Length: 400
Ligand code: AMP
Ligand code: MG
Image (cartoon, rainbow, N blue to C red; front, side, top):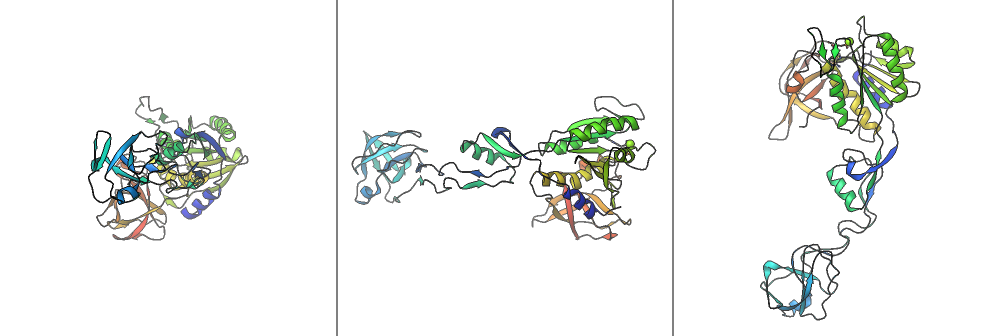
């Protein structure tokens, strides 16, 4: 049996890059950028007018000119209209490129337009006002977003603006999720009195969707021959297999035996934790990793967030864990020498402190309790009495 920390280390050592692929920028949301996103030209690319109004030469205003003859009207996207005398101005719109012969924009609210002339109604005008100067945000070739960042909506907008219609992203590992158990029926079926619908695989699939992984879902009955047949196919077709159930001490828990027969080297079996103690982890000779989680829904769910997601994150170039810390808001006793993953509800206090309220539920089979809690609080194995006010790591599975 290994500790939680040892299990985590062994799992994370097996994280590796699955390469890079180029995909259309519109479908890149949630993927990890594999090369820096650079400015293709200065930002803004020209002196950009930021107010609808008139463009003038400030020197003329300084000399006392307040009535300017309108030379023309320039919309955004049009070639700049240059003035030929300081007593002229150009009616100009937001987004237009500033004509070289002008240097200041006065907004419509501060002028009166009449008979081809614009009269300025204000006394103070700052030279250069209402202009967003070329290259003041970024210079051509500057990095706007570094490799290793998650692509969000702002990055999609930036890629579009750079004309980067395809973006390089970290390739996702190919993942299969397998449920085991003769008692399990499909969610679309009506179980008999002794059966249940298989839910773990769908919860796992949903967890992976957040990372844009579209995992394959399969089911195997508790039959050595069937397990062997399906697993041997999966071991050559996928980068990682997530199994749920069939890993404990039961008479029909055939997985440890079959996995070893199929030359999946066991890297650890059993972790000093509750829930999820019978977690089995191994690696096939062709590098396919096997995460075999105990079938109790809360065990599988916790193990996904504590082990699989960090492995996936590291493999796609993200920080493995985005651990948070919270303060326990009541006393808890847990005697066994196991790391206890307590289900908690999280809230921020008005002094920005994250506080965790225990929502214990009825153990690892009580998946309904997951709806009431937000996170697992990881309580160290060597302590039995956890006091209100103590701070421990939390693994959230809901947005907080
Ligand atoms: P096992 O690890 O196979 O001994 O299963 C432990 C418990 O989890 C049993 O009550 C199973 O019926 C249940 N279980 C196993 N797999 C699933 C699944 N995919 N969805 C829901 N419950 C499951
Ligand atoms: Mg089973």
